[in-house]
Length: 270
Image (cartoon, rainbow, N blue to C red):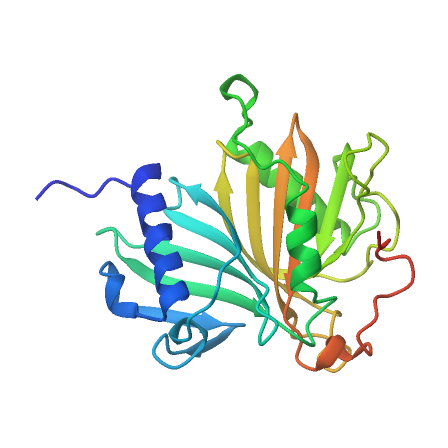
């Protein structure tokens, strides 16, 4: 048998199977799940037979990035069904045989940080996530450095983040951007300080100019200040500068112990 090749086509086919499973709740259609696969939902080991993947979800929008170096994928799912809306971020890790060995999801819904699936969908649809033209694509290291600068800045205010202009941040459903005006900026103040973003897990796609980081957002939940809320940060980098940021954060208690409101100046709502 030919050796497995972790190509973009293979990773996209894997993402397509994941999306079909989540849309139908039928796991038997996803034939390249490893027998020993681990599924985690908000950092807790669960079962795809009983938890969120087992329940059909009407997916109104999805966005995926493909990492052929680490053989991983990241997919953002938006479901606006008023009976139970979701925004879900999922990283899939493939083994040397091309099977999914680790399925890691950050699942957000009512009560999570700034959650608003309808708002998330609206603002995401205003953005351009087309592939980066071949001659303008950055290296894997350059993309990772831009994303890490943002994550490091949350613990050290002296770190310079390569924010572009325009730049917009989508957080749970709240948005810093206002259309496509060139004046949009992500450098609006309100970023935390002395807040380590720990246990980072990356998916990097040079073709799309994107980096997703799964991490523990310490300090986001006042009830568990050191554990770190399950969080996904997705970055789009253009010409070396951050253009878009998508974040979803799952809370241990409603509003992450902050009564469902954001800290002052953290997010300018539009």
